[in-house]
Length: 434
Image (tube, rainbow, N blue to C red; front, side, top):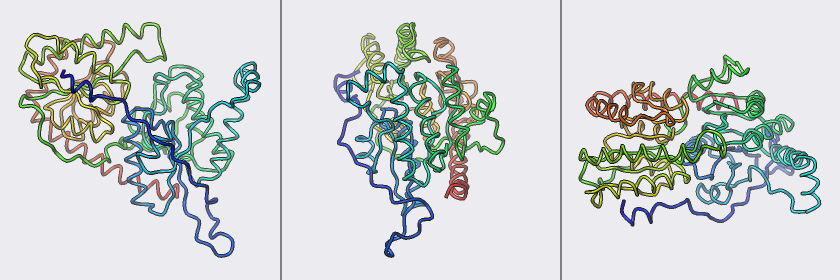
């Protein structure tokens, strides 16, 4: 991998904070005192946005596009992790998803003594106050109902806190085309199930997610199954290929196991990197170029590690291995469009591959990838990241390359059908929530 490619692969830039607009009142208020203008709809868009995960931000981008087209007079506010980044990037007012702990040493001491209860009470009071200023709060897409890399006190608790706050404030809360499961920690499972139960609207991005929630006690036959929101994003314009060789995309991930900071995480990561590097060298030996692709800022090191291993291969020339920064799913789609085939780990890298009509092999860490590829007629081209067999991967690659032209029409048709299904959900959701 060239030095310039390594230099260009960077974390998403920080930017200045964007302050939220003031609430304009509750629905049904009509006009303000003295015959003022009608009160507009105020919509909160809730999620792990700005954390560096391109799939999460892409889901928000897709949903913003829908809301801005169908509710042009609405005030849209993002409730997110990194308000300064999201506010500037999407030109939207923002609210921090969780405030900083009060700075008083006395409060911190009492909070620690009482196992964080005072701070959680403040979290709830703050969330109720904020929720009262919205007509509805929605979670657009993302796999928010799982505990991958999460402790119970992270997103499971945060989600429960906000849905409870919305119930107390009388503000509808909606999950739209979300992914669910697995939720490994028992308390996290209870928190997330309770949060989903308190929602006024739920739709899942696949049948598996709906079945998972039913299996842990939230069986609601009326909940819908609709595709992932990223399928609504516009396709990027084509650009000239960066290499004369046929390129194969390797969507990398900084994966260290399911649990947060698990003891064997480093060993899991190193085994994954070694196998992907071995497969990449095999591709180079076969006359292909390799394009390394990220889906999260946390994938940067994985790209650098595999790129370094491929650069040490005798005969690797400039341009054989390409790595570029990506700051959105549009960037990811543009890069994948220049490949013949994609081998990817992250769910939204798989989504992007299908959106631009590329055959995909999944090396996933959860069943969501397998379910999606089965819908595209690619069920035979999946492996689990912790049981990755490089020899089997080579055979899968050879078979998929042979049958590539047969699969592309089915992939393209599936993506088009998904867009239509999302359009239908949008109209249904407007009727139910607005």
